[in-house]
Length: 106
Length: 206
Image (cartoon, rainbow over all chains, first blue to last red):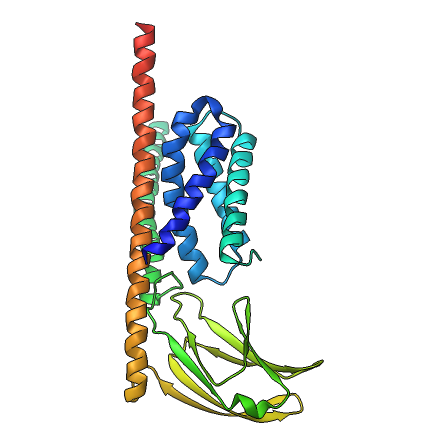
């Protein structure tokens, strides 16, 4: 059962440096926020993905918006910057997940 | 005369204001009732909320695949297209929201048969005894056994299903727990940073 949590760990590992690139001046804050934010969104995404027959992309779009809102709240910068950071980080982890698990995005 | 009219008007105004006030109070109470009704209506209605009705996994036992001749049997489970080459017991794991269903059909070159659908919503185990293909139809006999009142073999399967369901519940509870704790962590971190920033500003001003 605990095996599934390795993917949460991978997500944090992949996404944190990418978000740090966007918020270089606040890199120290990025670490706890990214850990907490991924620990919040990843379980919800996993639950919804296993329960409902919607595509992974639809759920990921929700995650991108939620994380962008959190970036806007926690870090200094515009909405566009927050959306870009969230999109880049989540797109990378999504593609890595698809590659590791042979999942279908659509 | 004017004074009498003034007093009457004043009284009417007072009564009118009182009535409007009373009406607003009633409406306010009614709005609580309506809001409460909307809020809790989903519970007795078993609305389609995640986790509304725990169900067990069901099995689809496919027998006599070799009788399909040159046809290849396919199972579509969500987006996975699985080829069934031998007799198989296919497990449809239980969903707690939208029913989990599978589609079965057979293909030979460009010829495709009509599809059969099975899901776990009815909570029946299925036994499909294939007999062959006629035109666009798969010929088969279907037996259904309710999951809860099955025979000994079914009970064994159901036992396993219950265990797997319990495991899924445990995982789900863990996922929800982690998510909730993380959300609390985010809120506390936000408040802590806000407080820290506030203190920093006061120090700077001093």
